[in-house]
Amino acid sequence: MHADLHTHTTASDGRLSPADVVAGAAEAGVDLLAITDHDTLDGVAAVAAAMPAGLRLIPGIELSANWRNSGVHIVGLQIDPDNSTLLKGVAQQTRVREQRAVEIARRLEKAGFTQTLEGARALAGGRQIGRPHFARYLVESGQIKDISTAFKRHLGRGKRGDVRQGWPEFTTVIDWIRAAGGIAVLAHPAKYKLTNLRLEALCAEFAAAGGAAMEVVSGRQEAALTDKLARMANRHGLRASAGSDFHQPGQSWAQLGDVQPLPPDCRPVWQDW
Ligand code: AMP
Ligand code: MN
Ligand code: MN
Ligand code: MN
Image 1 (cartoon, rainbow, N blue to C red):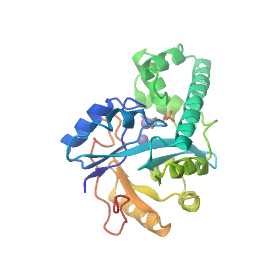
Image 2: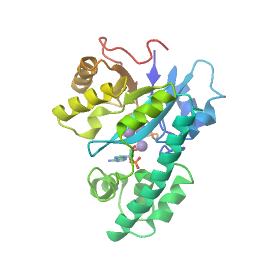
Image 3: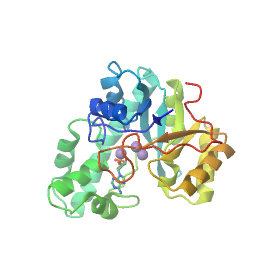
Image 4: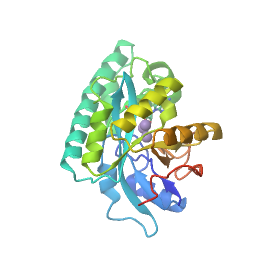
């Protein structure tokens, strides 16, 4: 099975339309594709009725949440996109993103940048706004040299533009996913830069709260990390998911469908689909 269970489209901070992500996945030989935009189901809705033969769409979402003062991402897979609890949650996330954008802009202006809210909003085009839109605006308006510098100095973890207020507790978003009949997956566990002890605690609390799987493979990663995450998943009774976290062609961490195989002792999340 060639699965890519974590991808983004223009419905959030991806650069390809949902139709282009589907076409690209088909071309890359993917048979199971989840579109998992940040806090929105619009990308899923755009292509659900028009999938090419041989490529199955798994309805998904990547929800932003809070765990012990860290921002974490929980992917929901096999969700019912019409579920009212989930839709209410998505509406809440949309309001949080809007308010947070105002706060991010306020902080960036304090640091001397200009027109950031207007600029980021224009790039988001009425869809789910996030830090990448601010980063792009700063670059495109000539206020900063590149995206990675924008994150490193102003928008990345712990910097002024890393606004986390407003995100729900991770147990709440797990509940939304489960209410929609879905599977809650802890996204890219290594990206939170937690100590091993804290990562173990996160996994234990995630499993206890009804989380069912974690991403053992997220983009291109070292084999040693894959092994470590596989062992961690098994220890906590979590199934294994895998995805590219694709956002745009040419991104450094993985192309669409570029997903390394899971270690043989994992229980793939798609096993019984
Ligand atoms: P947000 O959803 O507003 O919290 O923004 C988080 C998104 O920013 C992630 O999903 C990535 O797409 C992007 N991102 C985070 N860190 C970086 C980075 N260092 N360089 C480029 N993009 C990043
Ligand atoms: Mn993103
Ligand atoms: Mn993420
Ligand atoms: Mn993602």
